[in-house]
Amino acid sequence: MAGYHPTTLGSLEQLRAGRLPRRLVQLVAGLVLYGFTMAVMVRADLGLDPWDVFHQGAALHLPLTFGQVVIVVGALVLLLWIPLRQVPGLGTVLNVIIVGLAADAGLAVVERPDELWLRVVMMVGSVIGNGLAGALYIGAHLGPGPRDGLWLGLVRRTGHSVRILRTAIEVTVLVVGFILGGTVGVGTVFYAVAIGPTVQFFLPLTHARLRDSTPPASECG
Image (cartoon, rainbow, N blue to C red):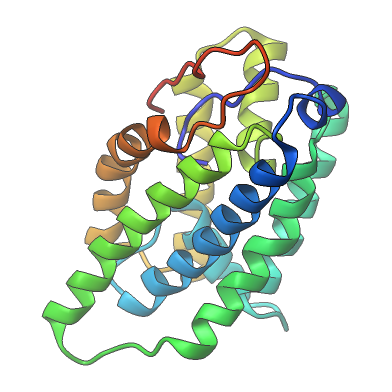
Protein backbone atom coordinates (compact mmCIF):
# COMPACT_ATOMS: atom_id res chain seq x y z
CA MET A 1 0.00 0.00 0.00
CA ALA A 2 1.12 3.41 -1.00
CA GLY A 3 4.80 2.64 -1.17
CA TYR A 4 5.77 2.95 2.46
CA HIS A 5 7.85 0.63 4.59
CA PRO A 6 5.82 -1.02 7.36
CA THR A 7 7.36 -1.93 10.67
CA THR A 8 9.98 -4.69 10.60
CA LEU A 9 8.51 -6.51 13.61
CA GLY A 10 7.77 -10.21 13.16
CA SER A 11 4.20 -11.49 13.13
CA LEU A 12 4.11 -12.45 16.82
CA GLU A 13 6.03 -9.34 17.85
CA GLN A 14 3.39 -7.23 16.10
CA LEU A 15 0.68 -8.79 18.24
CA ARG A 16 2.69 -8.35 21.43
CA ALA A 17 3.75 -4.76 20.79
CA GLY A 18 0.96 -3.24 22.90
CA ARG A 19 -2.30 -1.35 22.32
CA LEU A 20 -3.61 -4.27 20.26
CA PRO A 21 -7.37 -3.49 20.52
CA ARG A 22 -6.83 0.08 19.35
CA ARG A 23 -4.55 -1.09 16.54
CA LEU A 24 -7.02 -3.75 15.40
CA VAL A 25 -9.82 -1.18 15.17
CA GLN A 26 -7.52 1.14 13.22
CA LEU A 27 -6.46 -1.71 10.95
CA VAL A 28 -10.01 -2.77 10.08
CA ALA A 29 -11.13 0.85 9.63
CA GLY A 30 -8.22 1.44 7.25
CA LEU A 31 -8.95 -1.69 5.23
CA VAL A 32 -12.67 -0.92 4.91
CA LEU A 33 -11.92 2.66 3.88
CA TYR A 34 -9.30 1.43 1.42
CA GLY A 35 -11.76 -0.88 -0.30
CA PHE A 36 -14.53 1.71 -0.33
CA THR A 37 -12.31 4.40 -1.86
CA MET A 38 -11.25 1.90 -4.53
CA ALA A 39 -14.93 1.52 -5.42
CA VAL A 40 -15.44 5.30 -5.57
CA MET A 41 -12.50 5.61 -7.95
CA VAL A 42 -13.96 2.86 -10.14
CA ARG A 43 -17.27 4.74 -10.30
CA ALA A 44 -15.50 8.01 -11.11
CA ASP A 45 -14.39 6.24 -14.32
CA LEU A 46 -11.38 8.48 -14.91
CA GLY A 47 -8.61 5.93 -14.45
CA LEU A 48 -7.46 3.62 -11.67
CA ASP A 49 -4.23 2.86 -9.87
CA PRO A 50 -2.11 0.12 -11.53
CA TRP A 51 -3.29 -2.82 -9.44
CA ASP A 52 -6.94 -1.81 -9.81
CA VAL A 53 -6.53 -1.47 -13.58
CA PHE A 54 -5.47 -5.11 -13.46
CA HIS A 55 -8.30 -6.10 -11.08
CA GLN A 56 -10.89 -4.39 -13.25
CA GLY A 57 -9.48 -5.85 -16.46
CA ALA A 58 -9.40 -9.36 -15.02
CA ALA A 59 -12.99 -9.02 -13.74
CA LEU A 60 -14.14 -8.36 -17.32
CA HIS A 61 -12.94 -11.84 -18.31
CA LEU A 62 -13.83 -13.86 -15.22
CA PRO A 63 -17.14 -14.84 -13.58
CA LEU A 64 -16.12 -12.79 -10.57
CA THR A 65 -16.93 -9.35 -9.22
CA PHE A 66 -14.27 -6.66 -8.94
CA GLY A 67 -13.94 -7.27 -5.20
CA GLN A 68 -13.72 -11.02 -5.65
CA VAL A 69 -10.87 -10.53 -8.12
CA VAL A 70 -9.14 -8.31 -5.54
CA ILE A 71 -9.42 -11.15 -3.01
CA VAL A 72 -8.24 -13.87 -5.41
CA VAL A 73 -5.29 -11.81 -6.66
CA GLY A 74 -4.34 -10.95 -3.09
CA ALA A 75 -4.36 -14.64 -2.15
CA LEU A 76 -2.29 -15.59 -5.22
CA VAL A 77 0.23 -12.84 -4.52
CA LEU A 78 0.45 -14.09 -0.94
CA LEU A 79 1.52 -17.50 -2.28
CA LEU A 80 4.46 -15.76 -3.95
CA TRP A 81 5.65 -14.83 -0.46
CA ILE A 82 6.59 -18.47 0.17
CA PRO A 83 9.73 -18.60 -2.02
CA LEU A 84 10.62 -15.11 -0.80
CA ARG A 85 10.37 -16.34 2.81
CA GLN A 86 8.09 -13.51 3.74
CA VAL A 87 5.93 -14.12 6.81
CA PRO A 88 2.43 -12.56 6.76
CA GLY A 89 1.03 -10.68 9.71
CA LEU A 90 -2.55 -10.54 10.88
CA GLY A 91 -3.03 -7.37 8.85
CA THR A 92 -1.80 -9.16 5.74
CA VAL A 93 -4.42 -11.88 6.04
CA LEU A 94 -7.23 -9.44 6.84
CA ASN A 95 -6.15 -7.28 3.90
CA VAL A 96 -6.76 -10.16 1.49
CA ILE A 97 -10.34 -10.55 2.73
CA ILE A 98 -11.62 -7.16 3.87
CA VAL A 99 -10.47 -4.87 1.05
CA GLY A 100 -12.25 -6.89 -1.63
CA LEU A 101 -15.45 -7.18 0.39
CA ALA A 102 -15.43 -3.44 1.10
CA ALA A 103 -14.83 -2.69 -2.59
CA ASP A 104 -17.85 -4.74 -3.66
CA ALA A 105 -19.97 -3.12 -0.95
CA GLY A 106 -18.91 0.30 -2.19
CA LEU A 107 -19.71 -0.58 -5.80
CA ALA A 108 -23.17 -1.71 -4.68
CA VAL A 109 -24.04 1.68 -3.18
CA VAL A 110 -22.08 4.19 -5.30
CA GLU A 111 -23.24 4.96 -8.84
CA ARG A 112 -21.33 6.56 -11.68
CA PRO A 113 -22.56 10.17 -12.05
CA ASP A 114 -23.09 11.74 -15.46
CA GLU A 115 -21.57 15.11 -14.56
CA LEU A 116 -17.83 15.31 -15.28
CA TRP A 117 -17.16 17.73 -12.43
CA LEU A 118 -18.71 15.32 -9.95
CA ARG A 119 -16.61 12.46 -11.29
CA VAL A 120 -13.50 14.63 -10.85
CA VAL A 121 -14.51 15.35 -7.24
CA MET A 122 -15.00 11.62 -6.67
CA MET A 123 -11.61 10.86 -8.16
CA VAL A 124 -9.79 13.42 -6.02
CA GLY A 125 -11.72 12.44 -2.90
CA SER A 126 -11.06 8.76 -3.45
CA VAL A 127 -7.29 9.31 -3.73
CA ILE A 128 -7.25 11.41 -0.56
CA GLY A 129 -9.39 8.82 1.23
CA ASN A 130 -7.18 6.03 -0.08
CA GLY A 131 -4.13 7.82 1.28
CA LEU A 132 -5.77 8.14 4.71
CA ALA A 133 -6.75 4.47 4.56
CA GLY A 134 -3.21 3.44 3.69
CA ALA A 135 -1.84 5.50 6.58
CA LEU A 136 -4.33 3.93 9.00
CA TYR A 137 -3.38 0.47 7.84
CA ILE A 138 0.37 1.08 7.92
CA GLY A 139 0.17 2.91 11.24
CA ALA A 140 -1.45 -0.10 12.91
CA HIS A 141 1.82 -2.08 12.48
CA LEU A 142 0.20 -5.44 11.85
CA GLY A 143 1.94 -6.52 8.66
CA PRO A 144 2.15 -5.29 5.06
CA GLY A 145 -0.50 -5.95 2.44
CA PRO A 146 0.15 -8.87 0.08
CA ARG A 147 1.13 -6.64 -2.85
CA ASP A 148 3.50 -4.49 -0.80
CA GLY A 149 4.95 -7.60 0.79
CA LEU A 150 5.79 -8.88 -2.68
CA TRP A 151 8.09 -6.00 -3.57
CA LEU A 152 9.44 -5.80 -0.02
CA GLY A 153 10.39 -9.48 -0.24
CA LEU A 154 11.99 -8.99 -3.64
CA VAL A 155 13.98 -6.04 -2.33
CA ARG A 156 15.21 -8.11 0.59
CA ARG A 157 16.10 -11.15 -1.53
CA THR A 158 17.65 -9.38 -4.53
CA GLY A 159 19.15 -6.24 -3.04
CA HIS A 160 17.68 -4.08 -5.80
CA SER A 161 16.13 -0.72 -4.98
CA VAL A 162 12.54 -0.24 -3.88
CA ARG A 163 11.85 2.15 -6.74
CA ILE A 164 13.08 -0.23 -9.44
CA LEU A 165 11.24 -3.31 -8.22
CA ARG A 166 8.00 -1.59 -7.21
CA THR A 167 7.90 0.36 -10.46
CA ALA A 168 8.58 -2.79 -12.51
CA ILE A 169 5.75 -4.66 -10.78
CA GLU A 170 3.24 -1.83 -11.09
CA VAL A 171 4.08 -1.09 -14.73
CA THR A 172 3.63 -4.79 -15.50
CA VAL A 173 0.20 -5.07 -13.84
CA LEU A 174 -0.83 -1.74 -15.39
CA VAL A 175 0.03 -2.88 -18.91
CA VAL A 176 -1.60 -6.28 -18.49
CA GLY A 177 -4.68 -4.68 -16.92
CA PHE A 178 -4.95 -2.17 -19.75
CA ILE A 179 -4.73 -4.96 -22.34
CA LEU A 180 -7.52 -6.77 -20.48
CA GLY A 181 -9.71 -3.67 -20.62
CA GLY A 182 -9.01 -1.90 -17.32
CA THR A 183 -9.51 1.86 -17.18
CA VAL A 184 -6.38 3.99 -17.57
CA GLY A 185 -6.73 7.76 -17.57
CA VAL A 186 -6.05 10.99 -15.75
CA GLY A 187 -6.96 9.27 -12.48
CA THR A 188 -4.10 6.82 -12.99
CA VAL A 189 -1.62 9.68 -13.31
CA PHE A 190 -3.17 11.64 -10.42
CA TYR A 191 -3.00 8.59 -8.17
CA ALA A 192 0.66 7.98 -9.02
CA VAL A 193 1.57 11.61 -8.26
CA ALA A 194 -0.63 12.22 -5.22
CA ILE A 195 -0.80 8.99 -3.24
CA GLY A 196 2.73 9.14 -1.81
CA PRO A 197 2.49 12.69 -0.43
CA THR A 198 -1.04 11.98 0.83
CA VAL A 199 0.02 8.96 2.86
CA GLN A 200 3.08 10.91 4.04
CA PHE A 201 0.78 13.65 5.34
CA PHE A 202 -1.53 11.30 7.24
CA LEU A 203 1.04 8.81 8.54
CA PRO A 204 2.25 10.85 11.55
CA LEU A 205 -1.39 11.28 12.59
CA THR A 206 -2.14 7.55 12.45
CA HIS A 207 1.07 6.04 13.82
CA ALA A 208 0.18 3.81 16.78
CA ARG A 209 3.16 4.07 19.09
CA LEU A 210 4.41 0.66 20.14
CA ARG A 211 6.35 -0.36 23.21
CA ASP A 212 9.85 1.10 23.04
CA SER A 213 9.21 2.22 19.46
CA THR A 214 10.02 5.22 17.39
CA PRO A 215 7.86 6.58 14.57
CA PRO A 216 8.17 4.39 11.46
CA ALA A 217 10.55 5.31 8.70
CA SER A 218 8.76 6.07 5.48
CA GLU A 219 9.87 6.30 1.90
CA CYS A 220 7.75 7.49 -0.95
CA GLY A 221 7.54 4.77 -3.62
